[in-house]
Length: 445
Image (tube, rainbow, N blue to C red; front, side, top):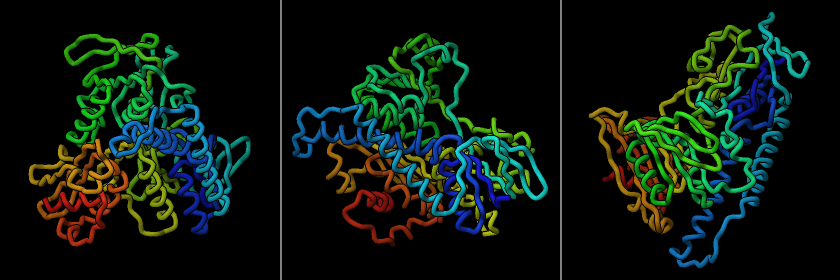
């Protein structure tokens, strides 16, 4: 009998497997596809690889702004896709090495939970029986597919998985959903020369992210040629056309060679015997702050909990779950979960947004141009840094637009998580010249 069986080898599963094994547990890890899960194979890593190629292309096209001549800059799409595969293969191989070095038994098969047995749980995978004293469910999520008439019949509709396997750049792309995934693909294909249309049911892009920052990003992409239709409901798909209703009740059509469905994700809670455990389920598996489910000995982490569907959240939840099993003090905190959109320019935020904050919260903000390094490296860039401060002086939220805010937001996350005050942050020596100095400049504003 294994000490721990883990279902799913994404950012939650493989992190948990390594930590548990190094903590002395015998661990079996089940994954029906590839190690790394959606993140390494269909999400975070392949999309960011593509987006970096697009960013290099953007810089090359506008290199004259920096005194550098790059004539006839263009994209070699097959080469970009080939590099994406190389990066994925390298990182998946790295996870495989980590599992081997930690003595984790990896089973490339779908595990099915048969139910409880004395001292643990019974599972089946690839016609083999397994037993484990504990279960950690990390089965992740999949793209949500709403019941839109004509959607399943259309050959033009793709999800984030299929769009990563295209062999050519589409001339026209219609994206249903203006959230993070939708905007990242809008960014990439806009750079490749595709005519992009984004249809979003909400009155803004990027859902719960800061309203002002979202509006600024939308304005920048509108200038680049991306067409936005906000507050619009998709009522059908007719071949390669998306039919939608405007807020005024008008029915319109948007034609595309491809239609990207990007309206969110849903937890994977079926197909592996969860019903045989008695675990409480709502939108996803219900857990407490120690990642324990309603059934003793069964834990869950990652997208399957349907709470914060981000890879870095999943990894931390997995660490907390294993710490709980090992008897270590650990509680999951969602106070400072950073959110990043890898468009060009990037968007990053952590903590409360201005729309979430009460009237007692002070809002400090400065253009990113107050950072000398930002001006030096972003000739055409506009940006904003916004810091929310509680009456106590504690920083409760930070939101940014401008490159490279994805690399700056961890400092803000530490400040929010630890309840650091403006005074404490200003006492830190910030290196110069860095774009991160914008945080200090904003706090001094």
